[in-house]
Length: 550
Image (tube, rainbow, N blue to C red; front, side, top):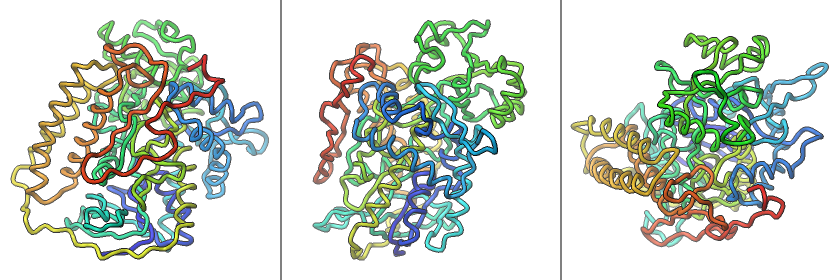
């Protein structure tokens, strides 16, 4: 058993920033499945939303967040996050992140605009913001003497008092598989932070990296934590469509800077779906593209920024330009073929404004969590902002907590299992799960499709759990086990929502109800943990100023 003050599971922006904030006073371990730069944060192109311009306001940012969230955002969370925007950017700048600047001497941060935003407020580093931020913080994490980095490790499950038979049910750390050595380690910690990202790999087509397999959501659920709003899966409208391109996202900022969506013949279509055209929120744009593709039998639509000129395109989108050029597409002269793809998990483990789950000692930050910020649809570039604001809050809460003794934790028991005899079962189930989710739980849903999906998921779960019970754990088995559980939570949540709202659109329930409510699922195994007091599961109050817009 190895002791740490804080165990961070995940190495994206939420996990890294929390670790760096805690490292001056705590011994921190960061567990990451691959390398530190392999998570979704490093893939983020657009930027970080923050109110920095004198013509902008916190009220405007909050209003845009509520409108995108289709009436389901929690106003206390929205205010908490947007008010922390300037402080979050200043923290990154103080740590050496080099954002794109403008003005005489480059003394002003360049702000761009994305769909759903009423002002320019996106701080960015060209069109590869995530890589710039992650690269800077990774260097500092590697150099810090109080941070231990456990790369090529994957968490198996959380260790709780309930599982140990203790009266005090807290999280005491996690069992973690060392992928290189092939054995499971016991990591004990006074506080554990789940920052493992979302579950995009539950779908056949996704902009997410291979690591996005719902691990934290599944582990938190198995530990007794409730989840909320899992039906709201954001499909990014514009993923590069090319047989040799793997999950390459075309940033929201391309449309924010004037990119136009067109049919193969060159006709625009977005204004027929929404008066905001290409600047409508992602759920609207994704459904519009899906509608046009199905109506006309298209493989893709086209996103055209070439009218802005070659120098503008190369200057604003150097990474996208270079990548597309590598596939034979010169975006300074021709449009980009694009399709929607699963992009962001808006629901997750319920947390309060300090990032705490109902299980003492366990925190959840970033995409793994449901804080109430995103509602039924995440506003562009609010995700990295949420990571930064909540990591600051969680770190402050952990620093303020009184030290606790950790009980002796048992080692992982492999005495009754053997090596797997047919790992083809894992590959087959993985493929079947992702195809079923894409076919039945996609951008447009029906009750019948959801019923079929749940039936197939439950059959797969039985096979996977039997496999898990009899064979030694591997990375692929653990990811598949977590992914099929996350898929079940998505479908169960979707079946409970008898309306269409935000990212959840059902042809059987096409109207939006007058009262917005969260979908909250509570584990039934063992004594259920209490819900947080800040309104989850209750009607979501709508700010009066938004009554006509949402």
